[in-house]
Image (cartoon, rainbow, N blue to C red; front, side, top):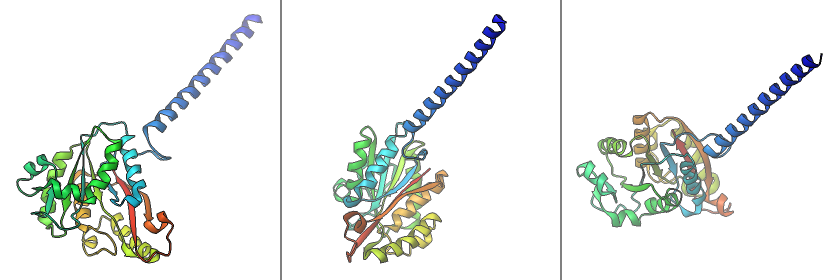
Length: 260
């Protein structure tokens, strides 16, 4: 009887140990996943993004920087594409990256001065660089005059330059110069087109909706080309909401979106 009781006690102890190790394994797994991914949901391997270039909404740039840096992978490079706000320089596409210029065979014009003075470049880059200090971050400014054939060519260059680990960031702001209520109405239309990857519809919009349809065309053509069509709208906010000036007659809207 003593042997039987001892045997039963041993079996019970073994079961308890197995159960305890199982719980420990699950705890460690959950802890690993929590560190590996940001937020309450798992962040996939980001291949593209939309983010603002207004310092008012810097929180969106910071969040994107954290999301990319917390993925636990070394990025080859990031290329920021955004509007040439003042339509300066000697071409429809300007870059501060000599290698991109060389690869483009004169499609892109090298102009560090114009590129680095435009907040479409320097605002998101200054934030992203803090979270990705070892990643090369280049910029391309896009004129509103950029043609469809130029967009297709630049996408091939981006695909070659970014490889499997790079990220293309579209530096775009949305509804401009409207009261909050009107801005949000315009944003709902714009978001519908973004969800549908409807480049043609976006090209017909003006500053009431977004500041660079051509930048969005490049982003969407690139994402389709590499098969990164999954997306998540991380945040949609307006400057009036951030600043607490809800009765302002002139506001700007922002989206943060990631693609994988």
